[in-house]
Amino acid sequence: MHSSVITFPGSNCDRDMDVALKKFGFKNKMVWHNDIELPKSDLVVLPGGFSYGDYLRCGSIASKSKIMKSVLNFAQGGGKVMGICNGFQILVECGLLPGVLLRNKYLEFICKNIFVKVNNKDNSYFKDIKKEIFEFHIAHNEGNYFCSKEQIKEINDNSQIALFYSDENGNVNKDYNPNGSLQNIAGILNKQKNVLGMMPHPERMIDPALSGEDGSIFFENLINNLK
Amino acid sequence: MKVSVIITLKKDVLDPQGKVIHQTLDGMGFENINEVRQGKYFEINTKEDDKKKAEAKVEEMCKKLLANLVIENYKIIGSE
Image (cartoon, rainbow over all chains, first blue to last red):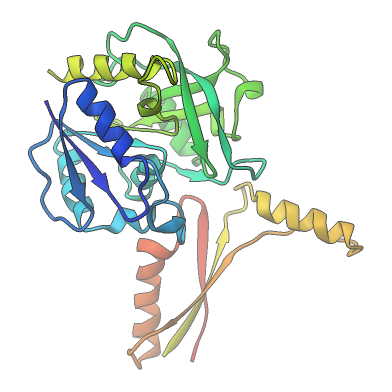
């Protein structure tokens, strides 16, 4: 399985993602934002970070990078594209995913472990996954998912919500909503379910000694589903 | 031609920064404020001399980059 991680100026989770993908068997290539062609890929990842210093709106400048034309073509042809954190912000800014990520409700940068509950397993990212509830790490200032009333209806009608913020038992309610996200949304899919954006960082949960292995379960399952 | 644009959050979008500014102004003794909404202002100096053409270009820039139409409105407020 071949993967590509795009590095934008200000990306800072690109190397972590590279380590995680390689650990679970992907042949990964790092791709610079100014490149035009994507290498042969079964999965393209937009990593976390602060592309272009979050100027204008988070992800807005990166969404117009040269490489993004190829990423858009790849996704529109059914290719798997995953955006984590700032990568999620880039995916909503380039229109591959609906909605937008606003400032966190209480204006604080949140950096902590949280739990998420998988809502939709009918896609390459979560099909046959062994767990329902994952402990992942979040680190963001703009993770407050928002969209119009028409868009949220469409998102629900098409089962596009991938992950909800929850407690460790999978209860989804506002007490376990860290950032004010609409309906506790932590991650969403596009209509075709080949594009996933999520605020939590599975790549930070792949070492039993440091962090636990909920991310390992995610990546192992992902590569099996893509084979 | 210099075109000025303001970008504001749509009515239903939460503006936590505006809220904090509102609270701070209250605390400073500025009374009778109903609401504060924070926005952005751009001055775009173009080589185009025709006002209509310059504004049309800036409008396109707003749609494609300067504003996110899911949450923001834009308004061209002047050209000189």
